[in-house]
Image (cartoon, rainbow, N blue to C red; front, top):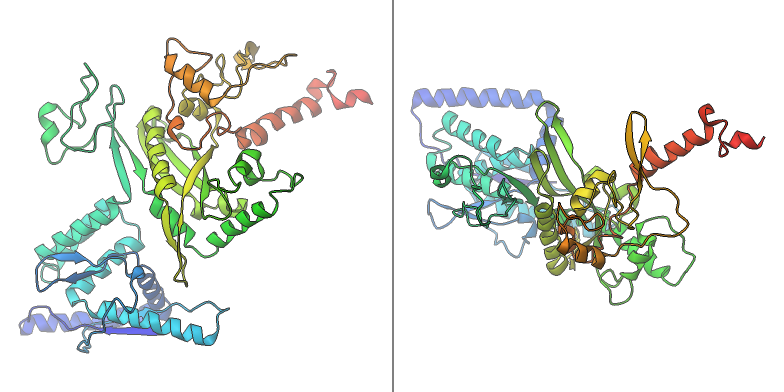
Length: 523
C-alpha cells in the first residue's frame, strides 16, 4: 500500500532555453529511473519510509523564512494532524511503502493499521512545500548513509553550488544548522586539561585551567587563540547519549520480550536454591537486587548493564589509540546480548598515550546515574502503552591492564596487583625476564572490600601506594557498582587464552613428562 503525495512546483519560472534544458533533464531522469529497475526503486522508498520517523520534518510557519522543528513523526498520530487538501501535480510524486502489520493479528486490525499509516503519511507530507520536501530528502539521505557532520556540511554546500535556485542561501544555511544540530545532540564533548586532566566547565569561554599554578589551556594555540571562533580543544573525550540508544534498542522487535522473559524466569526461580549458575542473572549479587522492592524487582521494568573498555592501537607508528566504552544489557540472552547491533556505545576517547581514566569513568558514572534516576520512556511498536525503564551498571569485564587503569591500582605484574585480595605475590624468573606469580599459601590473605579500597584511596598517591591502591577511582561514583565484586575476571584471557592454555600445556606436553603432575606418570 502506498501513500501518494503530490506537491506543486514552486521553483522560479525559467525562460524558453532554460525550460528546454530542464525538460531534457527530466527525460534523462526518467530514463535513468527506468534503468534502475523496480527493486532499486523499492529499496529507496523503503529507506525513505524507514527514516521518516528518525529524520526531522520541517514546516514553514506563517510564511516566515525560518524553519521550525516539526518533531519526530513517529510520535504523531492521526488526531494530531488535521487533514489538509493539496493540489495534485505531476511535477513531484513521492511514494512511501507502508509496512505490513504483524502476521498474527487479525485482518481487520491489519487494515486499520495500514489505513492509519497511510493517513499519517499523507497528512504530514502534504503539509510540506516542495522546498521542504527537498530538504527532508537531503536529511533522509544523510541519516540513511550515516554521514558525518563534515560530510553532511560538504553535501549541502555542494547542492547550493549546483542548484542555487533550488537551494537558496537562506534555506541551505538553516538546513546545515539543523543537520549539524541533529548529529551533535547524540554526544557530549568533555574537555580536559592536558597538563593535570582538570575537567573544564561546559561554558565554552572558560579556557584557563582551574588548577592552581597549572598553565594548561583549553584550546589549541596560545592564549590569544583561545577566543577564536575556529578554535579546537586540545584534549577531550566523548560521552554518548546512552538514553536514546537504550530507547531505540528496547523498541526493536523481540528485545523487550527477551528482557521480560528473563525477569519472569528469575522471579519463578527465586525460591529455588538449586537453580544452577549459568549466567550473570544467576549470581547471588544479582539475585539480591531482584528481591521485592529492590531495583531489579520483576514487578518493574528496570535493567542492568555490563560495560567494557580497552585500548585499540590505530597506527603503530604514531602510538595513537582508541578507548571506547561499550555496554550490554544483562537481561538479554547471551546470544542477543553480545550481538553487535545490540551493543551500546557509551564513550569514546582517541589520542596518544592513555585517557584520563578518573575523569573518563567519572563522566560515565554521571551518565549512568542519570539513567538510574530518570530512566527512559519506551513505547513498544504496535501498542499505545508506554513504560519507564531505568538502568544501572553492575559489572565491568576488562583485561588486567585496563582493570588497573580504571580501578587506579597497581598493574597485575606489580605488588598487590589483585583487586580481590591483598596478596602481594612474588617475582620469579621466566624466560629472559621476570614475572609476578601468586603462590599457594596455607593461610588466606585479607579480602578487599569497596569501603576499604575507598579508605586507602584517600590516603594513597602514586609515590605512596596503600596495598596497591594508587588513588581514587571514577568507578566509585557509579551507583550500585561494587569495585571489588563488579570487576569480574576476564573470561577470554583468563580461561580461553590464559589459565586453560597453561594447564593443557602442563598436563599434556612431553616437556613435563617427568613432573609429578603429568597425567601419564600414573600409568
